[in-house]
Image 1: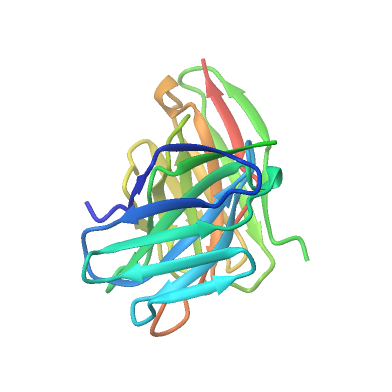
Image 2 (image 1 turned 90 degrees about the horizontal axis):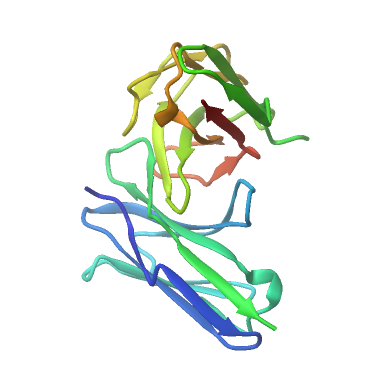
Length: 111
Length: 115
């Protein structure tokens, strides 16, 4: 399967700490995307990183991509209670017309 | 600009009943998708439509049919509902730019329970 596999499945940290979650995949990609899902809601896009990019930033979010290791990481700095959510990576493979989502990392930020 | 809308928000069916989930987007996107999400799981693609007039199976198409009614609307039909189809269903749309992928925009979901 070309599905992204995420690690860890669950992460609990204190407010203000940094949170890192990882995604591994198996095939050549066109891009990799990260999404957030608050409980009971639809997914919201966070960042898209293309296969020829190594790092991308958006506010407190930093995404890295290592195509040689077929892996990506999402770093959330200075976490806030509002960051509590599930985070999913989604792989856009070359030649495919769809994304394949991982099972997600459930992040809990404790006040 | 409502983005992606889905109806209904909640639905309870008995085994064997049929229903259609509706999805519409107002972003002029070419591609639309139907996913299901089971508790504690990621999204699994049921069907997608890369462009108006085309539909293709995803990872879990059995028991479902779709119709791309026009560029805005993409419906998902359960002909004979089964308890295994109890799930949250999400519709999404994407611009699908040439040479690469654009982001997907999601609707709020439909919570379906089949008794």
